[in-house]
Length: 115
Image (cartoon, rainbow, N blue to C red; front, side, top):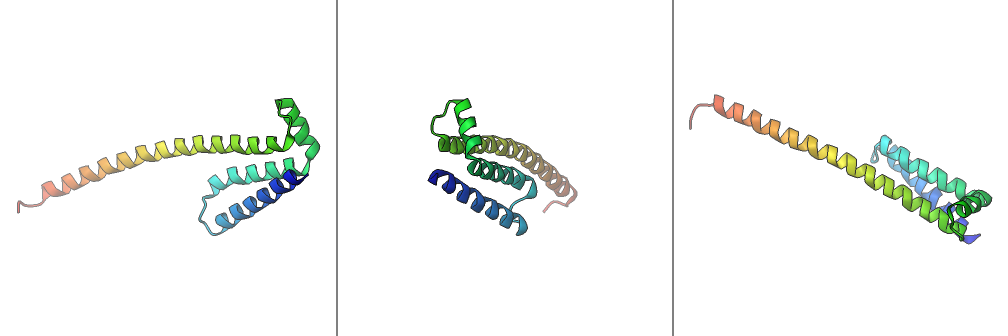
């Protein structure tokens, strides 16, 4: 029973931390949804041991609390993949902005008299 309590406490602390950072506007709301969902899912799995044990048996994990941690790791991998997609999109935007700034500087410098 101790692993369930440990996972429950960590999940609640993580949920509180996420909500705190959203309130302070340190964490963007659209990213916080993912963390909140993970925390709530782990809280539910920690509280309902029968559900966790049934899901673990279905997947083939014989130690049910390990299922909680595997589930958390899977969600973290999904998050890492999503953040890589966001990072790639941002990199494209940065490249485009850099090119536009270069063109604007070039245009401004053409209009100035020679020094």
